[in-house]
Length: 435
Image (cartoon, rainbow, N blue to C red):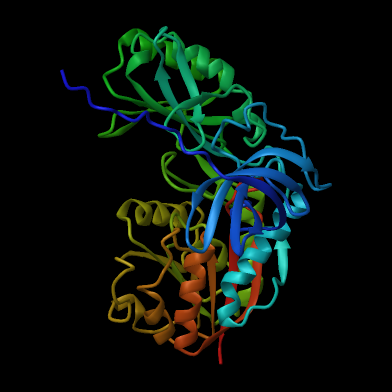
């Protein structure tokens, strides 16, 4: 019998070396240099030295993971969250708040440098713990029949159980354990998708339970009792419709205006920063009684209705009909008669729309992460005196700022808003004026 030699598989030895970190990238990763390449390492801070292991080696850069830390930065902090090393919700609890803000501001400046930005004019911040007023928790029953309720593990679909989260506002945080107990006792526990929690201003908490199969009458009774015991509004969502089981539609207050919203819809997660963001927009727009203002991506009227208190008129435009209807409802409920709302695809020309015929003196935009590249040329063609652009994605903000520059607008002010402390995300505002 002929025997063929088969070489044993060998595991390639990954390269290790000592790395000194001199900066952070926009995601909070440590940045050092080795053999002429930039090296990105999660968990290392400027001034720290550590042994790292290469996990990805490209032509111009490499990524590595921290093996051992030999020199510790005074900016390093002990994370408050007991599951911080596992949970994917936060990325920067090990970094001092001042370094988080300065590194995010520096990253914003780097991205906006092509449009002439040399510095951030202001950093707006508030409390960095217990600030998040809404969240979504994943649900799954494990092999032992136990319900796991929590957040996704870093770079994984695995769910990490959470019983205490220092990022959630206390009204949400204190509900985690009793909510888990309630859901664990449901007959349909293995057919639950996720649960959303919102700290509205008109009730303690609004809960939306996504279920994949119809709930039994016993389950509904138990959920009603939970809602009563904890004074929460409870909605059921089966994928087709959302039903209010007990309580009322949530709203939040801003500048003496109550804004009703769908509990599964978008609102800014940080109430105090949202208030400061609106105040900053009012200040930058320097609104006169004769101003006609256009608010694009207006949502339920978060900016539109506060601006209407100062302007001759404000026109809010949004792509989703449901949000337009909610914004109109909010204007009516708050007796604001000089705000009008329209549905329009904001990837298309806005100049030919009837509501744009009279023109606008000033414009505000608050797009999603994808930015406003398609509508930006049309906004500039309206020739407003100024444009205030609020962004949750500095990369698309930088791109759209270059578009504004091509149409004769320059950046005159930049503010960073620390909307999401201890995460890699940031909010920012830019004021454009005609050259």
